[in-house]
Image (tube, rainbow over all chains, first blue to last red; front, top):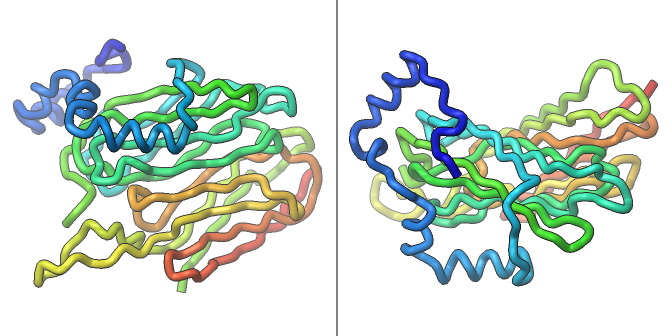
Length: 158
Length: 106
């Protein structure tokens, strides 16, 4: 996934990123890194949530700011491309923040009566990381989407 | 005590998928923080949120400590009929905070 797909350069944005210093700019491939740190725990959690099913990339759109100055409250919207009919709907959306002390964020169980598979909330992020959303569909398939959020001040601990 | 706010669109037409926005005051103490003396402040969060539309469950969410303080939760419902939306948030200590909101579908 191209990291700067959605990047729009503005003076303000550039200054903010510059303010993060070399650490943030040097962040290479956090997913590999995150998996390397705690593969067992993460896989266990995924198996618990998804019952061992494999997720395919797609259908899930995760809307978050690229840069969160305050990790204590970061807006997130998860949208899943689904007609939300009795025949085809999203049964559950799971959101994970891999590099938080506890990667779970939320699990939302939906029904066709929702009309649209979209949820929003505000979350805590301990540090710069990928946030991942999984969608379980009524046909049993699992889809996922993710986005990277750069965090200036972490939102766990003190 | 918790303050709860619910927001629906001003006009709701039958068949629309409308966004329901909710807000509740709560510290969502994560269990990760330490007090001045270095002792862990025990976790105390709202761990579940539900909404029913005219008695029918429509949303059921499990919430983790990663949800920010004063949880904002928004979701959609297919507006099929006028009636009542019943919301409930469950605290780790077992307290259930409830709120109901009338919905008028034209």
